[in-house]
Length: 446
Image (tube, rainbow, N blue to C red; front, side, top):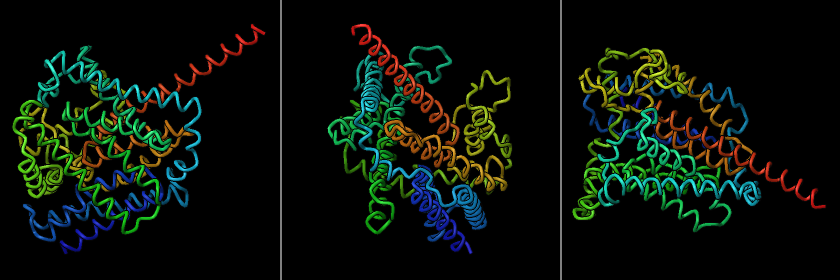
């Protein structure tokens, strides 16, 4: 029974992922993340009986996931019908010529400069606060103010640098499509440098998402070659993410350079993966919540979704309507330390849904089906540069949501997408004003 249910949940995740891939939807990144962080490791854990909880807990986990996925698919198919969700493949093929217009070239240039500016701000912070790049560390950046509402210049610069990265990371795609490969590779290297300085793992995601979109745009069907390629990509993502987490522990770049040993480094990564210490172990919190039947403070009250409804309102100005970060409540429950105010945990999207509404959380499959529909509509822009940037941004968001950091992923996408769309409108307005001025000047001269 246990193995059969684990197999069912794995199959439903694969079906949902394949469906979204065939429809050309960005939500394929959500299902790829859920497959990697829950579906496969859960199935393997059940198959080889390597879990720490009672088998009834594992069956419940499989059942919850299978029901959530089935409900999601039913409503997603009902909403879409035979239509394509986004169908970026045809867009990439048909509209490459549109990237060569003056408007697109201007936007590509601005996004490229935004990406360069994000790194320049980071380098400035590193030099001014830590004395140089070699003295930077994860702890140093983590301890910096993180809220723009603190009216702190450092906090503002830090947030601007991060948002510029996510806003402009998608410029890799139009640069690559227009054969400006060196510029595209330069953007990739900027992202890598950004991550090496901050050690913030999510900042590597725009690079991975852009590369996957470029690869996935070539073929709609998934054959043996595509399966092997996607498997290799998944392995690279796991190694990179867990490697970056391990990289943090070295302290400064100077200490990393002195103590780094590639064999030992890779062995530690493999140990983390096989022992569920890294990202692959996030699902354990979901098991814990199931075992304890959600009997914790703030659980079962849909706090994550109340926060999403009030995403545009800062918590301190919400008159108490916006609950505190539910990830901290989950962290408190998992640690059994309810005086905790900072430690948070992300139990994959499934664990977050269960913690928010218990078994009724399977109905949140309806919410996420509509959510995927809306996101695809928002990203479906006529301008391929804007479309590429939004697709990469939302792909990053889905990966973050899949690992269970639902509000953080949505907030990052909300603020960055708003910035991007305002920037695009500003550039269009400036171009229109420039054209009007040129027309009047030519009329005056004539």
